[in-house]
Length: 224
Image 1: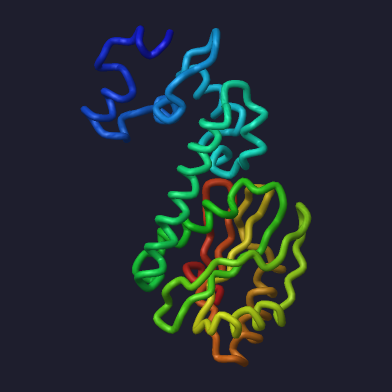
Image 2: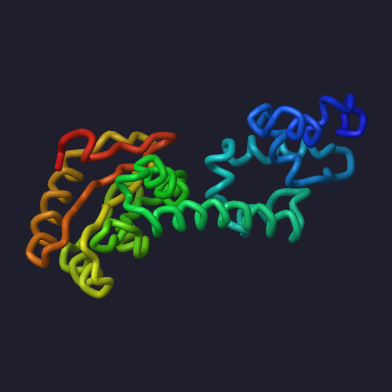
């Protein structure tokens, strides 16, 4: 069934305007962006197929333009629009973190790192460099590894902190397995970086481990 065949009150745009975006199912939200389907497949069916292929919004938000190009029905315009929406979400969170201390919005920090790290097939280690008021200066990917490990060099993190004139940092890395529980190696690395950065008077405020749909905070666990 195409959208035009639905009763007016059941169409995604009308539902959103009448009841808000939270009233829409995932496929309906995506259908609003896609707008049109392809021959033999309405836009709702196309949206559902795209979400199924990428494992929901979490996977879709981390799909590159090249990944999207392999989906029938996602032409250059639709791929560009999806990429733009993801980038707007990232920039919105970054702007929020740049204008107020990170402690004012810890949930925004978690959302921010999730948008960058969740669903990646390889392990990456990022650092959020903060100013003396704990506002975001930059997020940088420092190291990239395999499915099981990443080699992180404290001296490189110290060097970048000095170059950024950072007063504090938040460490973040993902677990491609989807399990966010910190390992003993994660705890050892955190303490090593904390000690190295303390030598140049840079505080480690937290270490966030990103898994499937969850972010674990070392600070909240009392591991710092």
